[in-house]
Length: 565
Image 1 (cartoon, rainbow, N blue to C red):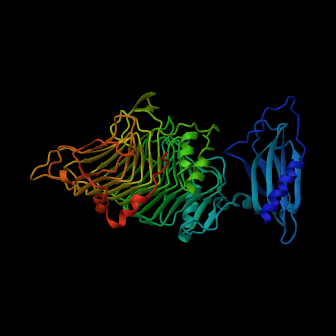
Image 2 (image 1 turned 90 degrees about the horizontal axis):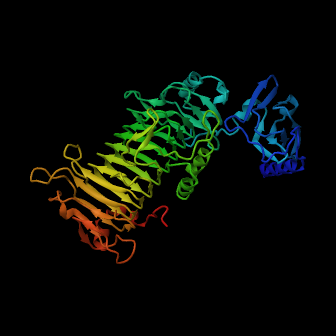
C-alpha cells in the first residue's frame, strides 16, 4: 500500500512540474532518448552520494525527485530539482533517515523520459546498486551484491579477476554473486568451482561483456575430475560468452540467460554427464555471429524447457509469448532492449544458427515447451569470407539416447531444400507428443555401428504437422544376422495439415523383419475422411492404437499443441 501511495505521489509531482524549454532554440520533435547501457552511477563520497548520468539525446534539462516515508507517517518530498547539469549530490541530511523512492527524468519541450525509478530504502551508494537483489536465489542460496565486492556496473576496464576473486571468497558459504543491471567487461575465461554461483537482475540486463576478447570467453569447467554440484547461472546477458560443463558436474541450473553476439561458431551452451536444468534462456545469433546453439553428451536427467531460439522480430516474439512461461517471456522482453557495445540496438534477425538442439548418449531427457524458429536460408553468411557458404544441419537432432520425451514444443523455419529439420538416430524410446511442426521433415534413422542398434519403442502421437512428414530409414537391408530393435513405431492421433506435397508417414522397404511393427492409426488427418499418404505402415484402429501407449503416458493424448490455429 505504501509503495502504491508513493508511486501516486510521484506521478502527481511529475504532472505538476512545468514542461521545460531549456536553452534549445528550436522545438524538439520527440522526447529524449535515454542511453541504454549506462543509466545512473552512484559514488559514495564520505557521508554523501554523488549521482551522475550520461546525457540523454535531445534533453534540455533533467528532473530529480526523491521522497521519504517514515514508519507511520505520510510520504514527504525531499528533492524536487530541475537542472541542466548531469550530476547531483545527495547530502547526509537526505540519507540519514533514508530515501524511499528516487526518480530521474530527461526532459525537453515535448515531454520527459524516465532514466530509472528506484524503490526501497536508500542510505548509501550500495543501496541504490543492490536494491533489486533477492535475499535468496530460486534454489535457496543467500546472495552477495557484486558492488559490495567492489565490482561496479559500467566500470572501465576488465573485471574478470575481480569476479574470480569474489566467487572464490563466497564459495565456502555457497553464496551467489549478484550482478546489478549494467555492463561488466570480462576479457578472459572464468573457471567455476564448487560453490560458485552467478545471478543477474531478473527485471533488468546484467551484461557480462566479452565483446573485447578476440575469441569467445568461456564460463564453466571442462576438467572431468572437478566435482561441482548444485550451482546456478541465472538471469545474465552473456555477450560473446559461452557456458561449458564437462565431467563430474551435477544439478546445475542454467536459467533465464540471454546469449548474443557469440563470435565462436561452437555451441553457446554445452553440458555433459549428469543432471542439468536448461530453462527460460534466450539464444540469439545475428548475421555476423553464425554457429550452433546447444549440445549435451551423456547427460542424465536433462530438463530443457521454455527456451527461445529465434529472431527478435515482432512476429517471432509475439508467437513465443503465447506459449512460453512467465520467466522466459520476461527475459525475452529484456532481450528486445539489448544493445551492442557501441550502443546500437541488436537487429531483428537473430536466427543464424547452423544447428539448434543436439544431444548424444543422453538418458531421460525431457524437452518441453520450447520455441525454435529461424528466418535464415539454406546457407548462412560467413563473416570470414563474406560469402553465404555455411551449411545447416538440423534444428533438433538426437542420437543414441535412452528415453527422450518431447512435448508441447514449436518447430519452424527450416528451409525446404534441407532434408531434415528434426532427426532421431539410433535410440531407445521416444515419446513425441503435442508438438507443432511447421514445414519441417521429421526423420528417424538407424545405422548398424551404434551402441543402440534400433529405435526402441517410438511414439509419435497428438502432434500437428503442417506441410511436414515423418520418415524412417535405415542404411542396410534386414537379414537373419542384422536386424535393428524396433518393437513399435506408432503414428497416432496426429493432425497432418498440408497444402504442399510434403505430408504423411513413410518407412523404408529395407525394414523387412520389423515391418509389422510400423503402425499408423486411422485418425491422423486434420479433416474427417481426408486420406493420409503412408508407406510400409500397417493401419490399425484408434482403439488399438490407444491401447499400445503405456499407461504412464496416456496423458500425452490430452496435451495441447502450442500455436495451433
